[in-house]
Length: 87
Image (cartoon, rainbow, N blue to C red; front, side, top):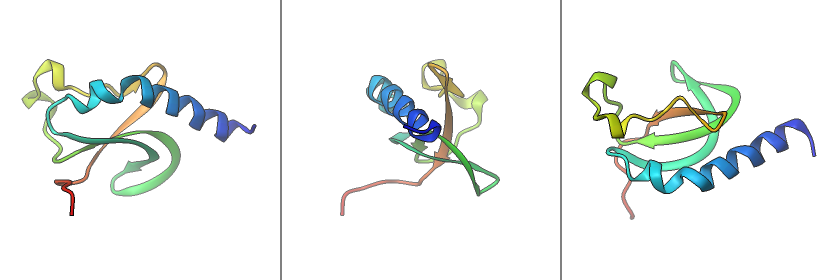
């Protein structure tokens, strides 16, 4: 197994362990594994992605709704997806 595969396995384990708790936060609509986005440009950094309907300034979030930048040593990227609804 190469380093990238090991990293993805680690992210999957953290996702499994924390997905329900992340989805319970206000504004969170999904949790996945993907590439970090910086200034709307995809990087090659594979991270735990937390999708939110709309990004909200940190100061306007309740403490329990803040998404950490790292969970169990795995980087987290918050990405705005808009509303997700079944078709």
